[in-house]
Image 1: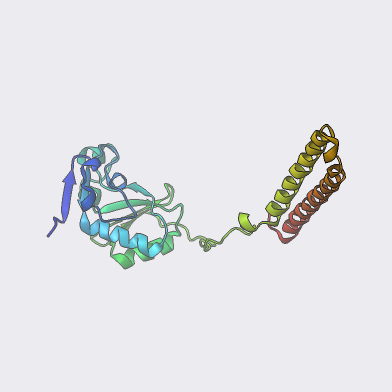
Image 2: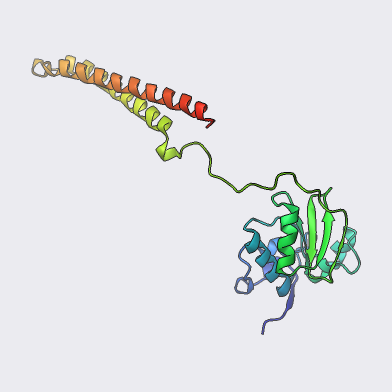
Length: 226
């Protein structure tokens, strides 16, 4: 049976084989002041369960605190941070109500609300709460949606621009070839008119590509794909 709590002088000393929380690193859990870390397996299991339940990153403001760092930041003398059983988590990417509901569901019991500082404290208990709750957001976070603009590989603008660019280079190449052939042997001269025709074909393709690009851009604006 592994120990329920293990302490290391620095988070770099934690063996990789002993770290089983994929969405967090020892550096995130370690004391911000000293680099020491206390691995509280129960607390970290609940933290990972909360991350899995929410499906969003948890930005940790504070996790374990060494006694000296806890004193330096004005922490409570019996703070759960000293046991590695508390986490201060930023609410920048979470709806606080949904976050608290999920945290309670996975087993956290202690809650501290710090709306002015933008984070919520959670710990293993006992059950209690303090601070002024976060104001209810009028509109919760909407599900993330893919961008409205077409994928780059399927973009009409990219296709049109690419065709115009390639055709312009082709027309320029043909013109150079004409100049070179005109100065060579007379046996090659009959090829020059055909090259002239090819050059005009390239020019026509370039103009068509530019037209497609302009149309696609205007169509995107009309549909609101800015």
